[in-house]
Amino acid sequence: MASTETTTETRNAADAKAADARGSETAGLEAGLDALETHVVSRPPVLRTLLSKALPPVVAVVIVLALWQLAYHFEVKPHYQLPSPVDVWGSLREKWLEGTLLSYVWESVSRGALGFVASLIIGTPLGLLVARVRPVRAAIGPILSGLQSLPSVAWVPAAIIWFGITDATIYAVVLLGAVPSIANGLVSGVDRIPPLFLRAGRTIGATGMKGVRHVLLPAALPGYISGLKQGWAFSWRSLMAAELIATSPDLGAGLGQLLDQGRVGSDMSLVLAAILLILIVGIGIELLIFAPIERRVLRSRGLLTHTR
Image (cartoon, rainbow, N blue to C red):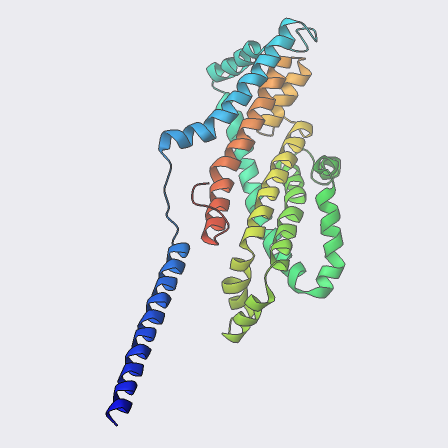
C-alpha cells in the first residue's frame, strides 16, 4: 500500500513538472510572438532624412540646368529660341519687380482650387452612384471612363461657344476634366472593399447614409485619395488649357495668360518662365497637400512604414 502511494506521489510530481515545463514553453512562445508584433520605431536623424529626400531632386535639377546651359552655350538652337537659364531667371525677376508675379500665380491657384472643390462636390456622389447602383454603372460607367481619357483642351472650343470668353468657360473645362477622374477613383476604391466589411456594416445596422459614412467611404479611402490626386492633376491641366485659349482683358490674368503673352511677343524667356511656374505650383500642391494626406491614410491602415 505504501509503495502504491509513493508511486502516485512520484507520478503527480512528474505531471506537475511537465505542466510547469509546458507553461514555461507557452509563456516563452507568447513572449516571442509579442516581440515579433512589437515594431520598434526608430526615427532617423532629421539631417539624414532631409539629405535623403532633398538631395536627389536637387541633384536632378542641377543636372538639368547644366545640360540646358550646355545646349545654350553650343547653340543647339538660336538664342531667341533657347534662352539660357539666366535669361529665364531675368524674366521672372522682371515680373517680380513689376509686382505682378504673385498675382498670376494666385489667379490660377484660386481658380484651380475653386474648380477642384466643385468637382469634388459633383464627383463624389456621382462615383458612389456608379459604384453601388448597377443600372447607373451600366449606363454611365463607360462614359466616365471615356471622358477621363478625353484631352481637356478638346472641351475649350465648345465651352467658349456655350459661355463666351468668361470665367464660366474656364470652370466648365475644369469640371469636365476633373469630375470623371474623381468619380472613377471612388468607384475603384469601392470595388476593392472586401465584401466582409460591407456585411459586417449591415449586421451592425450601418445601412443607407450611415453605411456610406461609416463603412463605404472609410474603406474606400485609399482609392478615393488616388482619385483626388488624379482629379487635381486633370483640374490643373484643364485650367492651363482654358487660360491659354480663352484670353480676354476682362478675365483675370493667370499663368495660362502669362504663357500666351510670351507666345504673342515671341518672348521665349517669358514662355519658359511661365512653364516653370506652372510646374512648380503643380509639384508644390502635390507635395504639400496630397502627399501628406495619402501618407497618413496609408499609414493608418498599416500599408506604409513609419520611416517613409
